[in-house]
Length: 128
Image (cartoon, rainbow, N blue to C red; front, side):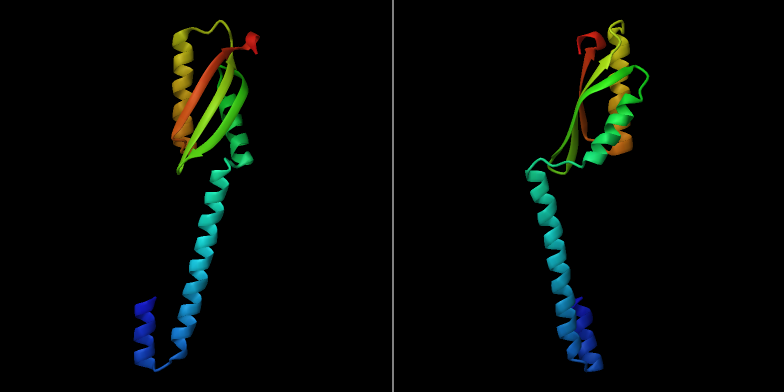
């Protein structure tokens, strides 16, 4: 922007372009600063988009082995999204089936929603 302004002022002899370019650049810097401040302050107070959490909950509840989503909390760790979730499953499920289910849930959360890590706890449905 600065180079274009200098070339325009020198070539076209339009000195008013310098002031206009400075004003536009200043507004852009102010806008970007406000966006960064807003995002950072929301992350500091542990805010996460409730609609996105709802989508996470729906996606996890849609798995065949999941009877219900007991608890779900999404949060940021820096710029990474982390999800802690507790699901209720059929008490007759084997350890191997539960292991496969947790791997599937973790994979879908990573690929579909770009979640860095999913901390998944599984409880029997009759213990909830």
